[in-house]
Amino acid sequence: MPFDIRPATASDIAAIERIVADAYSPYVLRIGATPGPMLDDYPARVAQGVVHVLETEEGIQAVLVLIPEADCLLLDNVAVAPGAQGKGYGRHLLRFAEDEARRRGHAWIRLYTQEKMTENIGIYRRYGYVETHRAEEIGLKRVFMKKPLF
Image (cartoon, rainbow, N blue to C red; front, top):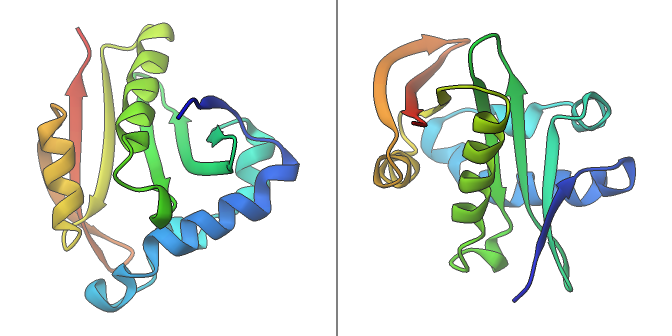
């Protein structure tokens, strides 16, 4: 199915918040806390220009948040609507994020995820991300990863 990845607009916020809630809510019980993406201020993020959406004829199917840092991009959030998972949208968003980091002249991209989100860690490893360290922040055990882009 054809899709477009584009910057999010204010009219996308309800769909963004729904997708994030639907994608992350299954993890609440497992990690014993609300995942950070569910607490994010999406109106502010959209206004900052750091949110992209993947849209098909059926509407917005996935969300990507990329935070610029001094020497890289932080892949802050990738969320695919549960009904759209398995269609390769997450892979396309990861590729888009890496291309965007290259376009901005960065040699690498980084991310972090919850230690108990083991399937996500596996996905990132398959796409070339390597673990750099683990740390506890705001009471959450996180796995930090990065990917060289050369």
